[in-house]
Length: 209
Image: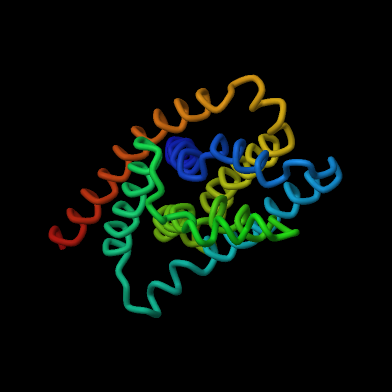
């Protein structure tokens, strides 16, 4: 179980990619007060945690009601994560997080915690797909310890994202835009390999049965 939790933490960290929040948060809060930055970072993390908790708790049941097998969602989730990985490696907008129209809209919003921070950047499609892939086989009633350990990994990533947003200005001065871009591309390579593995596992589960 420990190995699974560690692997999940790494995958979820790469998907959420807190490093990518640095330039985004700095640009969206440019000229704002420190109190506003604190409030937006705190609210975004709390809302993201609530969304991810609901998906972790009821996601598998929703798939069952809709008649969607875990293997099918594993394949789709792997493909979705692969698109995000390509976006990270080539530094292109794939539309898996936000569109150009949405990006222009969020610059006019006073409250940026819900959109675009909580969704789609923290609890976005990739994060939700990862939650369903990993929490789907784990029942909170039959394996509460395992479920809680996995969700502790979610909380750890959210705390890291909050710390990064709180220190966004100082971190950007240290690593710069180039450093953030390099780290994003390296993490994208890792995520791409993991995404392919998800698709392979989904295909094995589908055709093997």
